[in-house]
Length: 264
Image 1 (cartoon, one colour):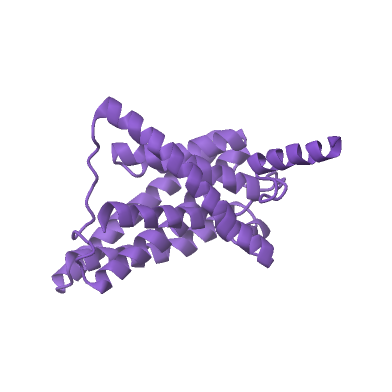
Image 2: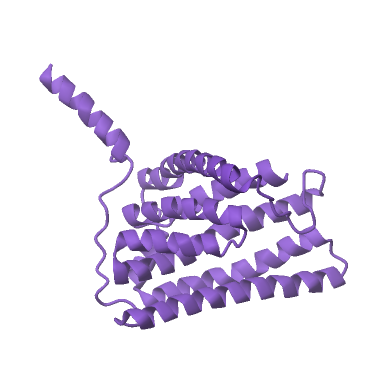
């Protein structure tokens, strides 16, 4: 009976520590990586790249959006097309920056699926658990936010895309918000920025500081908190697995749910 009790106890421990799902935490050697060993220089590079990303993202989207509107494309589809074009261009640029700041081997590991077991774990099991935890924490955050600041205002999608919009508008919005945005943001915040801060200050500082930056770029006061919570979860998963795949999938699932519930 003692052995049986021990097995049951181990099962609970394994369940709550996610050991059946997560592999051993990877031990990454950062000694040969980074543009500089100086912390100030490294932070200047991190913030400069983040600001450059935001400028390219916003100005690029606005420029293409206005150009498409002049051509007669509707506001909603024009904004989605502009977002798709800019984000598709930013993905290889961010990957290149990760590679230049780190190593080719680690860059490949960030997006490698590997075996079927690993693919199912990283692409399904972990994201589902992350979504459950994220939803619980966001509900708690939402109740606290409303009790302190009142009902938040939710920013509208450009062009007012909804279920009444054309199928093309809905599909373009989905591709932009639910596929390309999670890939771009996870590559930047949990790929480049998190690793850069981890190298300088350790993993917990990396998780929280990269999450705070991730929240702040969303600008809206209510969304900043939600994004920061998600960032902490995705950051911990990134550190724990050494892969961006679970975070990208969980982020895509969250954006899809938010898009359907909030806007469509």
